[in-house]
Every structure is written in structure tokens, then in C-alpha cells.
Length: 248
Ligand code: ADP
Ligand code: MG
Image 1 (cartoon, protein in one colour):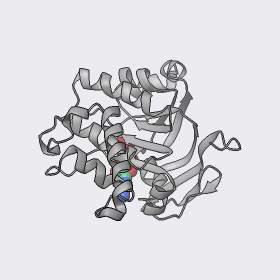
Image 2 (cartoon, protein in one colour):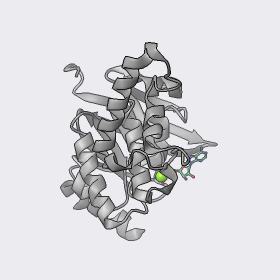
Image 3 (cartoon, protein in one colour):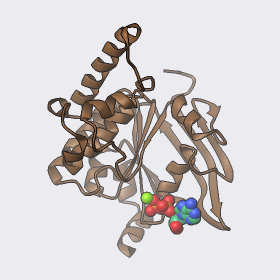
């Protein structure tokens, strides 16, 4: 932990235009260590685009993205991942015909093609890490199960586990509970709270009940801009926010 930067991520005046259309405009975002910071807002508000900008999938046309004080804007996607920012997309991208264990193993930064005696010790520690991560995501008894036959919720957790294998300092989750049962949502809330003990988490979410359960801080977006920011208590009582949500 770097005490000089209590905010692990500082995004200032961030913007991107697509053919003149400002999808994100003047966006400021400060992510504190070990916080779960949720971004909410109506469809098309620019939430996913913000994650695309932070992870380098889309290049910003304005502003800065500082990770522990270092400028990330303009860095390539793989460098941003390597620096310690992991991102889960809306649709799970797991290997359906591999087991849970194999999916986790493959996600380890040095997990690819780890074979042979020389690598034995490393292999053992990766195996241990896979088991630890599986325990965290509630899939300890599914290690040998083919990922394709997991429930929708379990697939989402596996993908979160695949991110955890890289031990990132920031995890970004785009609508992680979409399509989940109520029970799975509760379990996901617990998982996200647990994950944030060791890192910071950015979550995009629609379900207000869920946001209330997990959020340390909430940023409300509308038409590419910030509409409100603060505790869930504060933003959910903000007349501007209420209007946008009732208006949609
Ligand atoms: P949200 O996730 O809040 O629903 P998005 O970030 O996906 O919203 O989209 C915000 C707006 O930006 C939408 O109008 C969308 O059509 C537009 N947009 C997003 N990505 C692109 C792109 N690569 N090219 C053009 N328009 C885009
Ligand atoms: Mg989106």
C-alpha cells in the first residue's frame, strides 16, 4: 500500500467523443483503497465506456487516468492489466470445455504451459492459489467440473476468480449480477465485500437493492456526465437522481 496515494485511482476530466458524440464528458472519479465504488445510471449513460477508458480498450480524447499517481492514459490494454487493473465484461468469457481448476490455472500470469520438474514448486504454489481462489468464489467442490455446466451465477463467480488469479489492485465488474437469482445476488454481494478487503472494486450496477448492500460510495452518471456522487443514502435522496430514475 502506498500511503502517498490513498486514492488508488484518480480520474480527472475524462472524456471521449465518438464522431462528435460525447459519450463521457468531464468525468471525475476517485477510487479509495479497499472501497467498493459503484457507478449507476440509466442505459446509455456512459458507464461501460468509463470502464473501457480505464482499461485502455477505448482511448480517451480528454483528461487523465492516474493509477497510484502514474498516468495510464494512452497505455496499452495489456500494460494496464499488468499494472494491476483487472476487468470483467458483461458476458462471461470462460473456457466452457475446461474445468473450473483449469480455467483458474490458465488465468495465472505465469500459468500458461507450466510443465516439467523445474517448474514443480511454482506449479504447486499455483495449484494452491487456484484452491484458495476457488474457496473465495464458493467453487471449492466444483474444481473438476467443466465450466460449461456451471449455473449462470457460478460462471460469473468463476470469471471473478479468474481475475483474482492475477491479484489485481483494482477489479472492475460490469453488471455482475445481471440474470442472477436472488440467492446468487446475495452471495455475490458477500463475495464483493470480501474481495474489497484486499483491493479496490469498481462495480457498474442497475439493481438499487444490490448497490445498497455493497457500495461504500456511489457515482451517478447521466448522458456522459456525473449527476451526483456520495454515499448511497445521499445520492438516493438527491432530487436530480430521483428524477432521472423515475423519468426512465
Ligand atoms: P451504459 O453502459 O451506461 O449503458 P455505454 O457506455 O455502453 O452506456 O454507452 C454510452 C453511449 O456511448 C451510448 O450512446 C453508446 O451507443 C455510445 N458508445 C459506446 N461505445 C461506443 C463506440 N465504440 N462507438 C460509438 N458509440 C459508442
Ligand atoms: Mg453498460
